[in-house]
View (cartoon, rainbow, N blue to C red):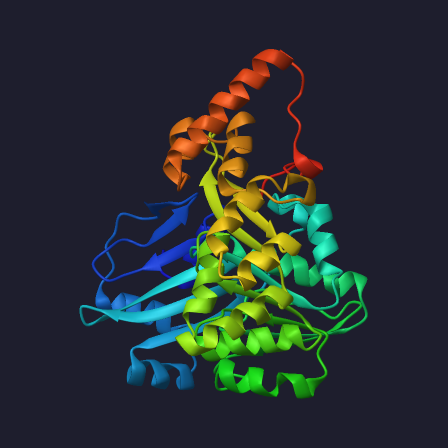
Length: 378
């Protein structure tokens, strides 16, 4: 394969998520979480530079050669968009290209609880957070929410992204998508000005620092629906991360602001399917009911987990409950389930309890809140 476009075609044809270009190695793609070679031929430093520079303009090349780091996104007609990071390693140029499909998947396709998500998207104000590790499907979840709002409301949506992932066309809403480095100099500058742009809904690509988090809280508190991401693994950690970013004298004020503005937290991970055909979504969902708000305000966030465990009627679920449901449906293996759980003993208890219930019910169908796992996302 002599061109980057050919490699990206191979990536998409094999349903991969990322293409890795690195000198001294064959080109590799990540398929269902595992890196595989697409050729056996190792690439030279000159070849990797030629490949990567083929999609950069002169300004981007100049910026990269000055800073040795570059984030960008670009599209290839009839193939998709690609979020790209270019870097240097051992004196040569490398890059990672992530597929961002042109088509935005719906809640059911992604394995999200559709009715709950639609309900949250209808809220006029507040903060909805989608968290998880890199590659856990956060961007796809947020894109589905923005698309639903775009179809069902007649409002103004502004997104601040670095870089822009999914492209949204105006439907019922007017959408303005701003990219860091191209349309604005940074999250802080754009968020400081955003309230003067008459938004109804704001998407913040990532809450990176104290200024960004404070801006997100202010925007949601002043009557706007705000969606954002964090790299945290569960709801309790998410609340603590937001509060701990601030100095001690300000933390009680932030807890109060968060308790009023927070609407929901989705914590995601993608787990390989048992049949080897892709990955399925495991998701912890916390809904900010009065009990959760009181715990946040009173600095008792460690007790939130027990509220999630017993909040099934509201659509809440722990990560272990989600993993257990996938395991019960034979969508993932027992070994993978135990590896992905942060509390293995709790998951084993759920499995034991579920096995006993299954014996009692004999062969009656298993019941799922909201019947949300109808089809699984990639």
